[in-house]
Image (cartoon, rainbow, N blue to C red):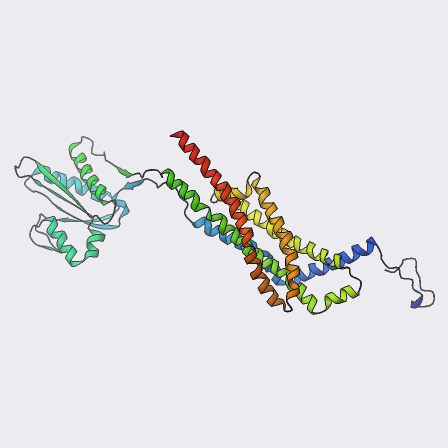
Length: 397
């Protein structure tokens, strides 16, 4: 540093130079070394990409987790023909019996009211069609013929059928419903179609209908506990994504150090008076800032997904109450242990690319311990939630 009070009396050799020393020299060296790391990080795309990798892995993991269906009670299902596209409905009737023909007319009405395209086949008439050779036939013979021609057509299109005829005494009308047992919900559908046709036939108001809803029973206590256990894998997948991304970022810190050591630039800095403690302190400070920014972005991503309610139950383990303190402490311990360890490992390599690859592998493997700690914390709170849920269930019963 040139003293402002100095002046040139006879030449440049008369210039008085005052060197920094003490605390002033420490600050100057620390600032210079820190700016060196900052400028290198701005020009080195590897460092920028490595800092974004942990955030990217977390976002991808949360998006995938969001698509996984969560365990819940099965919703109610309305049994209706509208769930099917095109069907063929064969039926038979007794033309000389008014109750049979009225029932068939009402049955046809409900078929036409549905959104499904229903092709009706009156097997009692002289119909000329597939498996009907211009003469009346019974439903079983017709369906047997269809099945022999195409089993796929029988299972996909022929779902229900109905037979309406007089009984042997001739006093009563016998109605028989047929159903295909391949779709699970066809038996109640066939019965409901017959019930609605009879209701329309014998009721005063023709606008009344019967709706059938299949409402599964709620999950049992054992099934709910099993669901809680299956959700514990979220902690494992999330921790794996975090440590995998951080493993790349930590290894990226070694590239510049190996390059600087092998090019003798570090040696020249020490020959020029740079202090070793200041050198490593400035290096650690900038890498810690890089690490902190990445971790802060991870917390922001967690908070965003937490408030979308899609993963609220899973992310509350890391963000709510005193649990956030555990999570922050875990990240601090990981950063303060992994960054110095990466510095030590740089002395094992002379090629920056090789050092980056091997340190990445080492960081990912050793980070499994961190993963286990995350999983144990997650399991602890998950088990406590499951236990309290079981207690509330027992008390309610």
